[in-house]
Length: 202
Image (cartoon, rainbow, N blue to C red; front, side, top):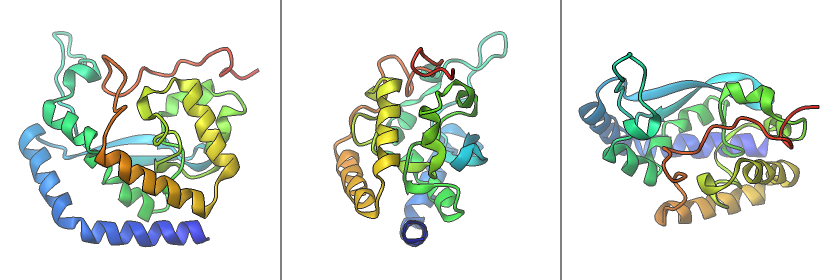
């Protein structure tokens, strides 16, 4: 209850306090990338329950001659890259926190298609609400290999506490001020998770 109350209060205060910035960012995205301003995608929440995950758009809708979307890295604009570097694209997730679908701190929500690829241990990352930031994000972010990232997520699940959340939030502020590990080389973020020997269910 303490965590949920803290999440709700901080998300509400931030949404109100940052409303001028959010409005400016929405206008900038509309001008640079057009509509829609928000990117919404179904992601797995606590216990794998799907929810609509929000971000500011950072990529164009450019397609190839066959009408297929170009790879993410080809559609990421310099403006979008700056948004990601400063983590400004993540601010709409405060709405997800307010609605109780996400927490300020927790394992990042990944793709629905990854759910059947997790081992029983890796699937434990869904025992808690996903977060805007997390232990993996302040310890390597997208530069981590998938197995390393999942182990950090599981360490958080097994050691979570209010004080750990405060530590991660403080570390996140420092990381935003000194951005690094935004993406793997040649990727908009990370390569897709396709499972592994350790990551497959028995």
